[in-house]
Image 1 (cartoon, helix red, strand yellow):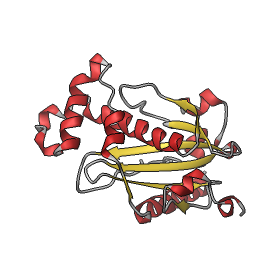
Image 2: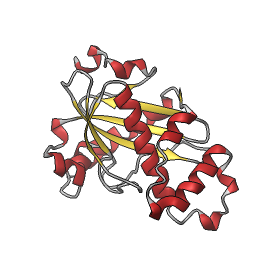
Image 3: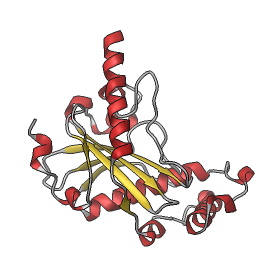
Image 4: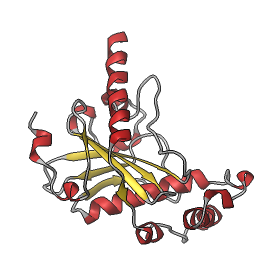
Length: 211
């Protein structure tokens, strides 16, 4: 078990470093606006706070008012933005969590690549904080490691009936305050590739899967 944990953390370290090094890509404000779903009455106040923070600044929202679901709504909107970017690039949704709040523990999305040959599990992180990028969770099992994907309490993986060895991985990090996003791909949870242009998502480079 000790060596497995070391290998897991080593992959987590490399994944986090790749995400930090990935070039930021432009995030269209109109795309974000299209993903704010005010039909959910329970989330309307948090969505209103999100819209205010996105259009002006998080600091317009008093700190004591940010606890009322803002984090959950931010996560759900980030997932919707990521799914829209992928669908526009030709990807097919297989599994997603219906909002208005982020689904919490487990994968956020499962998507088929444009060529329909690769099933990807997708982890999405989003923040309204202007001074930092969101990060993957680190722990006994690092988020998006094969061991984390295959644990029994990962509901998205259980729903689609696969384990970590059956899928490829994509991590999308969204910086709402800066109107930017980043992404990294891991075809086999060993190699990691940074997405340097959105066009790479339209047709994934064959070299990413050749090792």
